[in-house]
Amino acid sequence: MTNETNPPAFTIRYVNLASESMGARATSTSDDFFAAKERMLQDSNPVFLADKYDDNGKWMDGWESRRRRHGGHDHCVVRLAHAGQIHGVEVDTSFFTGNYPPEFSLEGALCGDREPADDDWQLIVEKTAIAGDSKNYVPIENAGVFDTICLHIYPDGGIARLRVYGQSMWDTAIETDQEYELSAIGNGGRVIGFSDSHYGPAWPIFVPGRGVNMGDGWETRRRRDGGTDWLVAALGRPGRVTRIEVDTAHFKGNYPDRCSIQAALITGKSDEEALAEAEGWPMLLPVQNLEMDRQHFYADEIDNNFGPVSHIRFNNIPDGGISRLRVFGTVDIDD
Image 1 (cartoon, one colour):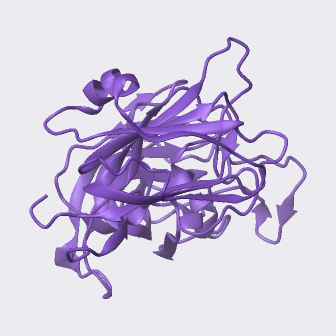
Image 2 (cartoon, helix red, strand yellow):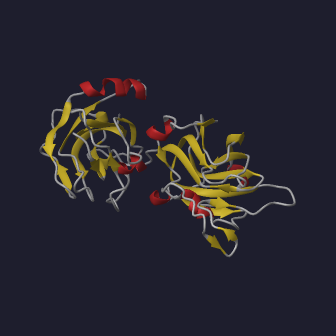
Image 3 (spheres, one colour):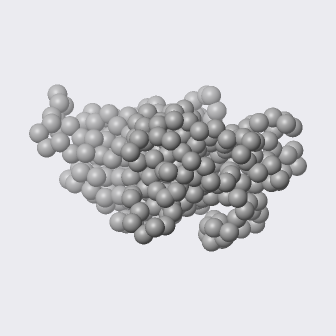
């Protein structure tokens, strides 16, 4: 377990499968007397309102159970937004100081449309100590695929935010000549690195639908060095790119002036190795001018000499924000 100012790599390279905005939901809990379980899954950072109280006591931004007097411990079951392999968890106890649980553990289950049975649960994180008013990070090495998790806290207390970082698994039967959204989170698309993400995580650019506001996307700080911002992503499955969408919804005075996309087929290399060579990848989509607050669609502009690609590098020229990036293509049966 780490408690860090700088988050570990899994918070960058994987998606928060427990994100409320993506569809995750808290389905049951042993107790949420002081603060509703649903608050724990919010995408926003927790806040503390010193003078806010409700009928049960001090209002807290997260999930908080009452004080236990007769043994046992509390738990909360969360249905993840997508089934996936979990690579790390963040247990955020911000503003919980005298009322945080000193330990937690995590179980996972894969149960589809039914409720999890007792024998579905698999231990993912053993009982682990955590600190109050802190972001507690735990890397996970487990090859299992889970769609439901159970957070156990010992014995009681409050958790401001739970974030479960993982990769959705491609579960669509592949058909020849069928076009798929290769970059979609639900198909396993994920960001593996970027030059800057000052205004929040980059992964929302791959979620379904258009952005709801300027905070729903990827935005870099203003560059002052004459360089160009970039983002590298792994597609859910290698494919031959047929069309691309770049959406600058809600970005008006801060959208990129231009963009381009490089791509490559990477096999047998780590994320670090892919990032190291991405700047030299050939150009899939040459430089295109962008406009504020609109969807840009590209098909004829794409280099049709490309074979299958597994990774892309989006060049954000020179800086700014985009709401969504979608890469569509076909998948070879034997890929």
